[in-house]
Image (tube, rainbow, N blue to C red; front, top):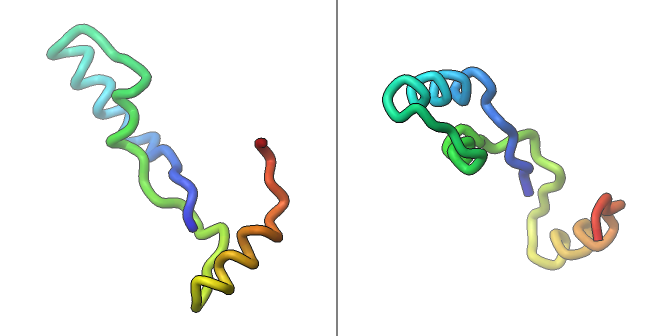
Length: 61
């Protein structure tokens, strides 16, 4: 399981291009600039993954 992180340089290029060609920028236009971050957890089996997932200290919900 990996979080998505923003590639700030790619996003800045996309922002500049959008503002130059369209004159607009919306938050969802950042989505193509997201890339996989460092893994939060990995497992060799479904059972191991579920056990590790249940043991995580969740920030939300």
